[in-house]
Length: 446
Ligand SMILES: [Zn+2]
Image 1: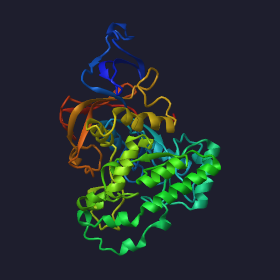
Image 2: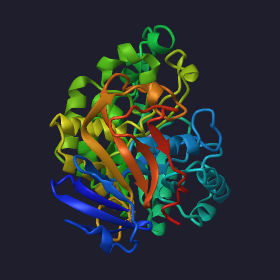
Image 3: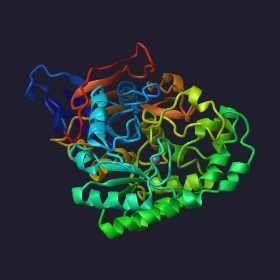
Image 4: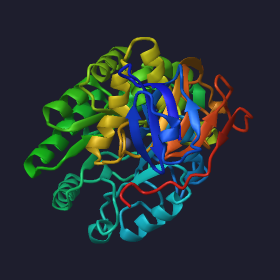
């Protein structure tokens, strides 16, 4: 395939030749006749922006164990429609991905993926590191310093032992950093309101305090310091947490919901806005956005954590935590770039260059010869309203309902079309303007 007249995020206009699974050449005016394949397909990308496929380093695709929430098929289709070509999946499935056998069960489920993926190993009180590290893990984590979905919270001694082992295995450790001893139990005495959207979800934010995040980040980076481990702080939600990660020498991730939503949105969202760590004040949200825009934060990843509407329609203290996001991450960031709030270069650093570097995905994340042909074409002016009904996740709602996003027209995984939408065409499940290709996703540690 020859993609002609594509604009890169640095403003260069180039042609990109894809040969097999790889990018073969990136240059001005490549001649179709000079290709290795004389009848190669030519895609005229004039007027569109060509991006490296996004890497979402934090998803929960729920299989095995919770296929009513999401499957590898639906999760990866949703990712492809949002321009994500690689995901890293977390271990709080059932059984938890904390033994070799459980890893094998996860790998079996993941074989239904239509994009590439990494599979993380998890730490529990009774994990089996010997069999687990015998498998092709992407990273260790997220290691939960407080209970979240799946109740995988570990004690400090177990965390420190796990970090030691990760150092010995030369594997990065992704940490869910909240110190539950600093949660504000008095918040539980507040009036939690009704169910679902009628719940007073602000109490969840009051309960899981900002202090609890910063303290846990400091603890995790101290352990990293003592052991020489590579620590990655997942879903930092406060400026204090981000600054503690940077000061402690860790890499750090921010989720779209902490970039675009705040406690001010909880009146409307109710339990749909319950996630861990929780939404923060508008003032903190702005400070987090600033750190993403100025390069302090390394990556944006989604913590895509689907639950059904029925599950979310519970009272505040019983509702599950988590929101979907894999399909809307890149569109929301591109909308910010369109508005001038982020540079396009920064977007590509956040979702491609940096996650590839941090998680050692050496063939991913760049539009250069020799790299995997994971590519996304977007019309940077084609902004449209985000609607849960249009997304392809099993979870048919989104906390970003009604906001604007810039969605892909074409997504390639290792040179194969995995998602295509007619220029300017509508999207949404079953819409005639879009189609999915049959691509066999592969483990990035294959
Ligand atoms: Zn987490």
